[in-house]
Image 1 (cartoon, rainbow, N blue to C red):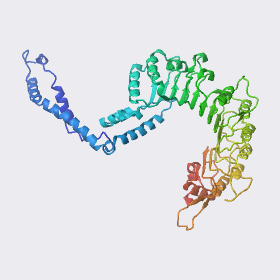
Image 2: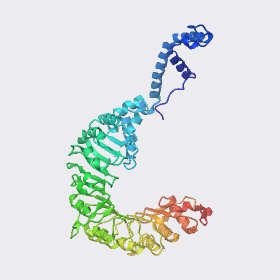
Image 3: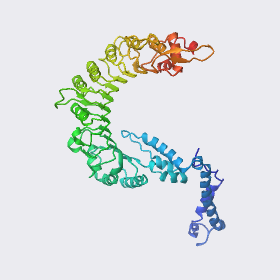
Image 4: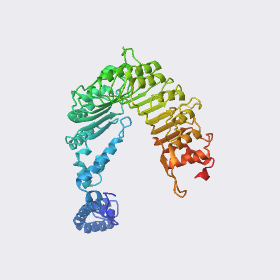
Length: 548
């Protein structure tokens, strides 16, 4: 469907338009001055040309009217063939446009900013689309501004004014990013643009700043209150400038719930209302800042931190209890983190409401006992557990020890980037065996995670196909009564999904035996099991042609 459909252009229309335009040109006998024609007179050829033009000029007005009529008829034809605006009320079209622009805006990444102006694209289709798009405020309350080198900021200011005017009084989602560092970007030309955004600070709902931290004061100006601000994201890629130049002062933000800070400066440079936060993400962050945020945000539910640094500040001597935290994610970095700091972070907190935990190891050490003690001390009912990264110091036995005290887990995600022998890798035959029920009514205390619903693994193959097939087989049963019917599997326990993505798949990898392959294939067709390796080397699998 296209709203810009038009009738087929008549043959020669372009030529006719060109001729009509040429009639406006004036002929002069001076053009014939170098010929044998007497001065001041037309040559024979030019005289004939002028005579033809005079005859055509008689019809110029009529042709111009017809061309204008044709443009109007084309517009009416477009509207007639536009199924969207012809068959749906304007309110429904506005709703569809809003879904489109929301999808376009969701693709905006402040770290790799590509601005797509969805409402303007809609308005360029036809007059009817433009009329609806320009009168729908919901299309204009999100504005993404990317300041490029040598940008014409005057044009940017005018476009921003028009954009904001069309949003009327709706809450605003504003992103302001720049690819230039603070040493390259002069703050003075930005002042008119910042003034426009400051004038609507009472409507800020979501604010994303991907500019140098030295420009925060320019952006905020005299604004100290954002009464409707709910989400704030600060991204500063420049860690070379002085911390004294980095200050974000917006202390009155009573509705602020979601904060994401990627700033190479201490949190003391940031003045916001921390008390109502529900979600907080920071990278980098020091250990003392970690303990600073938790008591300030007593309603915090999701805490995600990375790039953790040690500190020289005094830390709590007894565990700090945070009763509302439900999700806790940690990403360590070998260059900034040591094992003792990680142990300190985990041993000095209690999270009794914790249900989701994720740990990405970027160092060579792994705090096995500290992780276990956190869950034991918190006495939480953990349902989601994710472990990834460099797990050289975490063996299958370590993982089994951690999981054995977490019977409430329903989702387990593991990613091991190191290639180790089967006897000490985290995804081993021993772990698979402990996850496999002996039968549907198995109540064995040896079984891990009896409530497990989803198992996801990414890494090298450090287990046998037969052991994985046993897990898949124990998870499902073939309920076929008539061999002529296609395979239909029924779940025999809580597991609903098993996904394995294997690294280093090549001809040296162990081939899948026919029995295991049949079990994998049936479960895969039923949507229960997925393993990309089965397709990656399918032509090398023993018995492939017979089974498929």
